[in-house]
Amino acid sequence: MATAVIVKNNGRKPVKLTGAILNHFKFKKRDGTSIKGLRSCSYCTHPPLPSPFQVLSPSEAMKYEENPAWFSFGYEPEKKPGVWSVQDVPITVLKNKLSRVYTAPPEERRKHFYNTAPSKYETIDQGRELFFRIIKIGFEDIYVSSPGSLSRKFGNEGYFICTGSASMLVPVLVNPGEEWRAAQVIEHDNL
Image 1 (tube, helix red, strand yellow):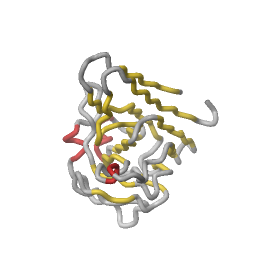
Image 2: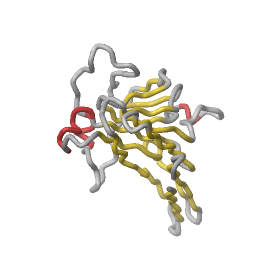
Image 3: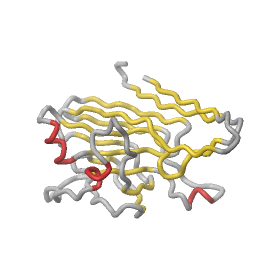
Image 4: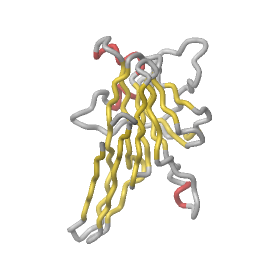
């Protein structure tokens, strides 16, 4: 499945854009939910962009949640918004609540060479033994959100996460007469 965005600036002034192509994936159970492919990537805690279609509001996404069990493989406590960290585990377990943007920090982007977020990563549903590969094109950021225990307010029929390609921290600048193109592809071996 592919989604593309084409923005052409027909105006006389530059336009700054922030946005995302976000997807909600349903999982069989909370314990088997994770993402693979973000190791060594910089990230910061960040609320989701406000939207009339949001499942969790920015304030709900940023609210403190209970501590995880004693042994939670892959668990990393959330930092304060704006504090940068590097993903140091190969698999990000999404059992607990988090709201993150994976990308190069804005000050790093001023350098001639810097590490960017990967162009692809995978969601993993261990309960159903399914994975989906997400490929970003033209976007700098990856947004990942997990509701943690707040998922109970939507019933007990499984678990969900929100993730996708984004331009959230540094807006895309489209000058007059220019065009910006971006896309996101979701792949699965059975699709």
